[in-house]
Figure 1 (cartoon, helix red, strand yellow):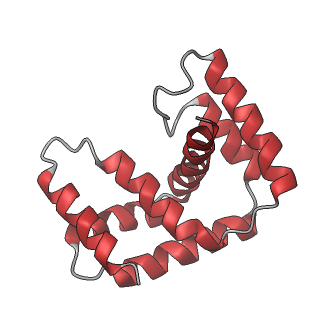
Figure 2 (tube, helix red, strand yellow):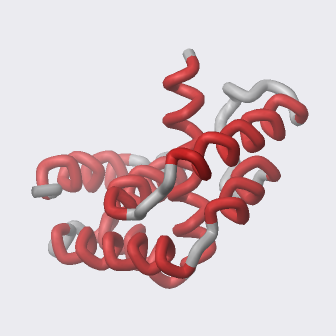
Figure 3 (cartoon, helix red, strand yellow):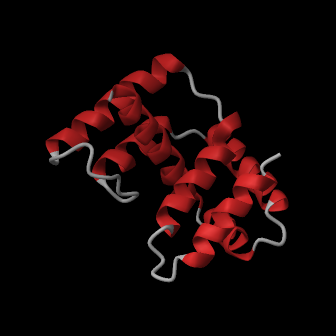
Length: 136
């Protein structure tokens, strides 16, 4: 059940008057929603490697990921697949049911569902962030 961490996320979003945590929340929600997205390791590893090289070419690869940045966009394109996007959309829909009564989280999920390209980039951004953390 996702409810306890969704409630924590709701409190964080509600307390964030500057809106600085929204981008992080989108990535977290997309990552959790994408837990059933099927990714082949033989396809994922080289795509992540290319994205890390793009990050490094742009400067500090540990400086934070931009959903519209070159590395995230390249990774999104490398891994794009209609079935994967459908699995992500299904996961987002299931999370939206779990988030009933949590207005900030529900709004973030609605935004992801309304913008599938942003949702996909948020998901792959989480994959890239996880890969960078594993390398440290």
